[in-house]
Length: 156
Length: 141
Image: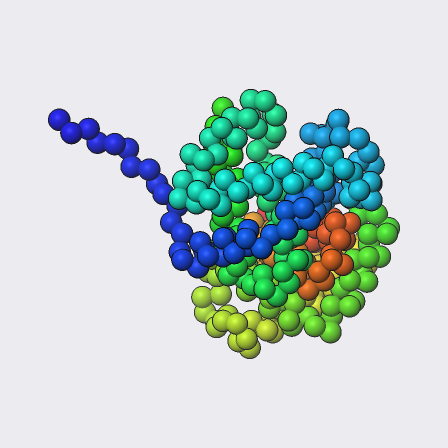
């Protein structure tokens, strides 16, 4: 007897959305944008600093901006997005391990993922200016929403 | 909680944006319509395509209201009293949309101001727009 497999709801991407995501990440300066997004998050949402107790001086915006450990971590996080960029058709599976890591080891409240995603959006907007059109923004936000959702999936 | 320096920065920023209120407002609205299609349901009776007269006048109206409130943030409830009533009893826009619009306004400001939209400015603006939205929704129930 044929067993029915549970159909996986796939995220559908238009050509415009795929191209937009690939283009954004192809021209991204990880050295600049990663640290900028993370440090912005720590300034705009100061409670997120709770996860960075061992990172040294986070006393004010200037200290956060020049903190070398934050800079390194910002780059790490941004490169973590590469996995999603390269596996847009199954981000859920691609992020299974990272989700477990954030839940079991890092104990990060998944609400924080959205905060960082919003800061990354703003950093990109400031960088790209008018090239960050409403449609580009919508595509990027859809992508980040899938990433955020995938990162939160393994929490229990 | 907004500090004195932040209130001054916010007032200064919106003073500078008042001459281009139309562009800023329309841009933020377009971003909201693109990223959050549900928000378009409030405009089913009008033309809100890019450049349309209604989009421009509506965008301008919103930005001028925000700029007016920015002039004296400690008086938000007084300044917004008429708009509170209007939104609660006439418009009845679900307040979740205020958050969506605020986010899109932040994106518009980032695009417009580039690196001048520093983390500190972003934080101040986010706090202001959140307070504005909260006061706007106060008479809903």
